[in-house]
Length: 309
Ligand code: AHR
Image (tube, rainbow, N blue to C red; front, side):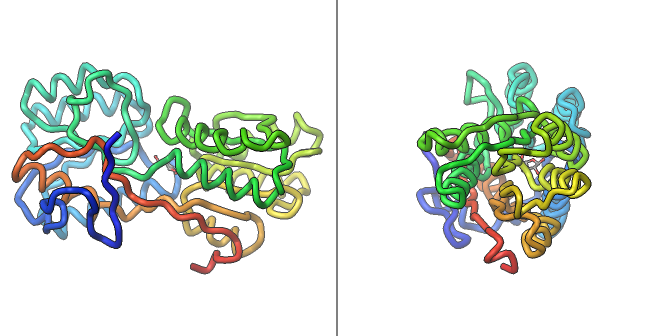
């Protein structure tokens, strides 16, 4: 798949239209997943602030984690004849019909953060997001090194059927499959929430006699890991010491857990990404030049030694 990457605020491999200002009078309908953890509300706040800064009329719809709410919101945006529709899809499936309706109405659709699984890729212009598979691989590589390639792992998965849950799992497994003594021994969805992560870890603690023989917890986001940390502490365990804790997002509460020694590594998912997303949309609206299907936002690994970054 052709990709372009943001390097130090500029775009490599894309036409110059992307490097320009997005100041352009447009109305964008944005269907957001919800507010399931600390990362998502930070992303929503940035999208609103950045829209205001750029003079974009943003119609924001919170789907509260439900795809059916997103379908309704997208249909409402079509009826309102917005200039563009932006979707952060809850799950990858179920999008073909509504995207065809947007296309028939002549309204371009862009994806932010999460992906969709549609046979006809012409139904959306492009996706602007981090590489979830890379995040999983970074987490796996960090753990392989920290555990010297020997580790029984419990995994808290994100929302079933969502792009980050699918891709982070794939990336993580791709790395650990190179180490015969690394394996995922328990895996369950905690739906990207703190409560979900806590409940999942409580069930892992029960099922493994207080995490006996478990060397690491890999959570698809920080909030589930923060819930897992609570569950472990309540069971008298020492997260970050008895068990290695690696997750994704690098939200402020995780930075604190890293500094406190209760977590060991987190892969950063940037939340202030409106500055990447809007110029792509407004640039395309100006000249309609074909874009690659994926504009990649980079990810970084942070671990306890650099938690103060
Ligand atoms: O789609 C990105 C993921 O969604 C973030 O990692 C997570 O915190 C959120 O729920």
